[in-house]
View 1 (cartoon, rainbow over the protein chains, first blue to last red):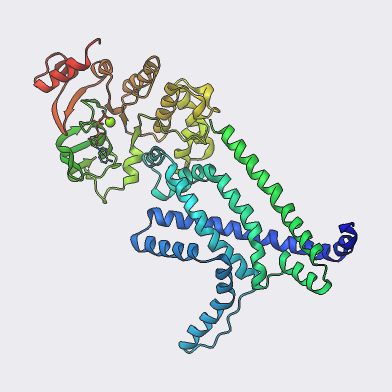
View 2 (tube, each protein chain N blue to C red):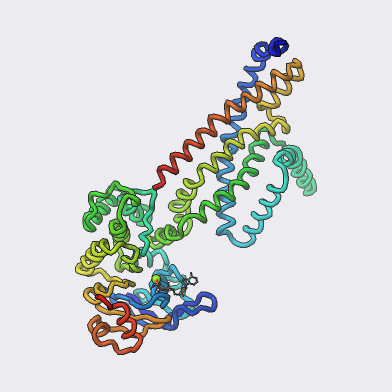
Length: 236
Length: 242
Ligand SMILES: Nc1ncnc2c1ncn2[C@@H]1O[C@H](COP(=O)(O)OP(=O)(O)OP(=O)(O)O)[C@@H](O)[C@H]1O
Ligand SMILES: [Mg+2]
């Protein structure tokens, strides 16, 4: 009994590989843009929750509760399907006829940015708090303003300290892009599903899919570990 | 430079400063001494608004310190040196010194670097320009911190126990720099436990206890003929072995 003899890996590869290669591009694009935006969202939520005025703090806390209390998949579906309907409905109530639509990839990236931004904001907040208040005071007495002090002196040190944690979020985000299949983003999973249902090379197709994610995430997670090691040995 | 009237500061129910009235003149060197917890740091930090006073008034150059006087201007003109140096660890020594002139005073990079190098030479650390703070001894770090404060070309410097975090053998290199500053006519207010320095260098010594100025006067008077009981007790305690 030779299990490989029953399967058609090379034939599956021939047709699936080009498609997966395109899916690769989508995943990389969604992750890079999504992670960049998530970092910005995270920084602003962290700063808002630390230094913002009370109503803003309350709003951000509410947002955090909602985002952490619902699955990413539900958030993606909500942004892609529900938000445009909601906007059109509300516009309609004011007498405007609109047909707002959102492309799958935009919805997907927005969902990743908001979801990850919320989780990352907690890490960023902890990073900011961990910086000795003496740094802030030293900058203030030199004549820097509050926000200049925050962005020039405190943030760079805070981010440096949390690069490993942020790196782990990056690796997680790559894998979570598979959820974008459910809002019709033609990424790896959706392409594999389509291929498998057309050819019935189910075992082969999903095995290749798993390998594709491994190719993306394993080197990256080792890179994160390496950076973590470099940072800890460099921090004197 | 400073005129202070009935300055008070509370932390909740804790009255840390109770009605401090004094003036600080141009070119004066004032040392503040007193037991731990007497409010010395708090007083110093009220002068550059790191702490906001609860009551009383502080006039700086005739202007009342409140929102009318730009806090940033005050801080550009009144520099501060901390007990724990607080250098920026991610910058080199040179960048630590030239950073504020460049970004606060918008000085050109070349000028700022020249200024920084000359100040580092002045505190005896020209050869450490490219080192990082963590590679320096405490005494060297504190001298960099002084150069960093000087780079803003302040009219006055506040020191909060600048030598208290240093190993004994490193204290003098910092005090020497401060003595040089006094010779150049820099106004300074120094909270210190270095009684020798207070006696030799200051124009006026202030003894604080429990949020009050108990006694002030020329160093000879305070150290040789203290009028107040509490001053005598404090000096007896700290001068053992000096
Ligand atoms: N941020 C703060 N919040 C609450 N209480 C404070 C704060 N800063 C200082 N205090 C209190 O104020 C009092 C005076 O503190 P301060 O640091 O001014 O004393 P000090 O004379 O500088 O003492 P030391 O010689 O130990 O530095 C202390 O009882 C301290 O606990
Ligand atoms: Mg103190």
